[in-house]
Length: 184
Image 1: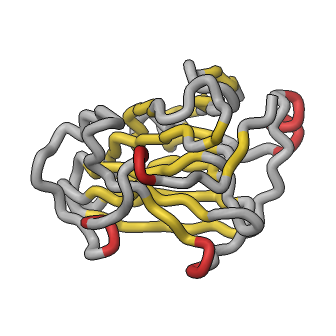
Image 2 (image 1 turned 135 degrees about the vertical axis):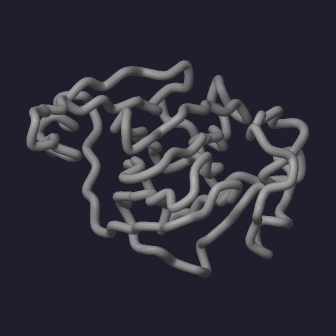
Image 3 (image 1 turned 180 degrees about the vertical axis):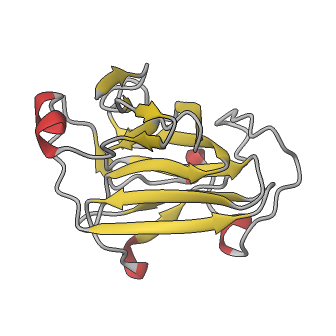
């Protein structure tokens, strides 16, 4: 398992070792010892799965402390443009985003620590997205940032996505009071 730093501190691409032959493939999607060696001491307590058609945008979501969530995300089937936005006050990359294509074919994962807003746009029908979370879902701690905030400059690759009612609204980053603080 390889942990590849992104331009945003604490956000990592995780490349598993995939072993394949004529029967199919096998890979570890999580190994605590590997994460510890990479400096990530994540304790996962909830797994989530979503199914979406092509053209769906989910996000940009986060949970506030004390129910903040770190997430290890990957795609089992289909593909997404995955987005993580740094919303940690004092971070040298506050308000910056990182995007990567995750797919059932490339098997790449993204480690998104607490302090990031997260979202994705589905690029294929019947996309199955998996999340390992470090905290359980808590509606009263849930927050979001407007997916198409012009100040974020995210190119979602689509202009009229299928959005939930919740994702159609939300504050822009400039009007947002982040509950997160960057820790060096």
